[in-house]
Image 1: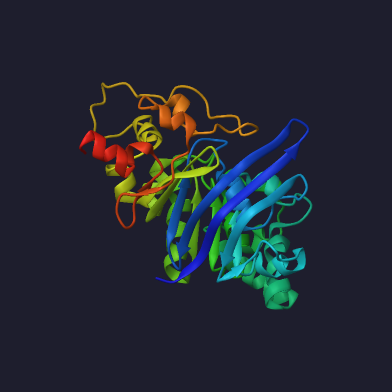
Image 2: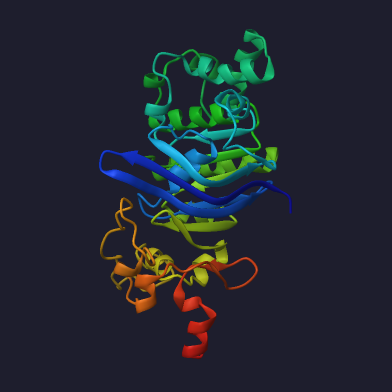
Amino acid sequence: MERILEVKDLHVSFHTYAGEVKAVRGVNFHVNKGEAVAIVGESGCGKSVTAQSIMKLIPTPPGQYKKGEILFNGKDIIPMSNKQMQDIRGKDMGMIFQDPMTSLNPTMTIGNQIMEGLIKHQNMAKSAAKQRAIELLEIVGIPQPDRRVNQYPHEFSGGMRQRAMIAISLACSPKLLIADEPTTALDVTIQAQILDLMKDLQKKMGTSIIMITHDLGVVAEMCERVIVMYAGKVIEQGTVDEIFYNPQHPYTKGLLHSVPRLDLNRDEPLTPIFGTPPDLLKPPAGCGFAARCDCTMKVCLEHDPELTEINASHKSACWLQHPMAKARTGS
């Protein structure tokens, strides 16, 4: 299957007064054309920094792309200039940001914010761009789009602002859509509508989607593959079925055990993951999850495990999966 995006050994740091924060540490993954991939993990694990790196929205300084490649349609975007990226953003890549109220421009009407990309990337006349903006608002389910197109973000509800963000992101039919917590702070009814909308648009336009979320229900609903991140690294990846029904990394198992499930005994208490993620000012020498893991061995504290192949589509970065560990335990 043809790949639209490949992230290879990506390292991103932020230089602060306290020192260097190593936010992303050697991330590798790919996205195929027309595929929906989820990136999951706790807050601070590097999900949003990875997403913003793909769009090249990391401010430099204080941010720095220290190492690696981000290949979009086979071309590395890291060396590209800001002008070159402006030709890609909006046209070939779109992003739905986590908080639409802070992402939308409060001084511009919703219509003008949609029209901006259409005029720049598709050379549309203003009248044609406005008509297309009305059509997009209708597609994303906003009532009375011909009136709403002239309104400002503060006149929209939370769910409508999120739909407007989707309309802006999809205006030029991007090949890749990055959705960073697109259903955060929305009620469950609106969440379901937003997810149905994204699935429908993916099917009609063949758009590839990266879904950044900590909501495993959204992952099951939307995605085909899952990438689990922890402490700035990919610690497990596989298909949705592999991650949900055969998780291999203790952290992935902890995530699944800490959310309620209808197919298990409801009287059993949820099991939280005790402790906190490591400080990425001084990342641990070994596995980032070792301090919180019930299966920690001496090697976990001293050496960082590499991704071990469980099968062709499933990989886990855990010493328990290493061939030598399996040989000793007989598993």
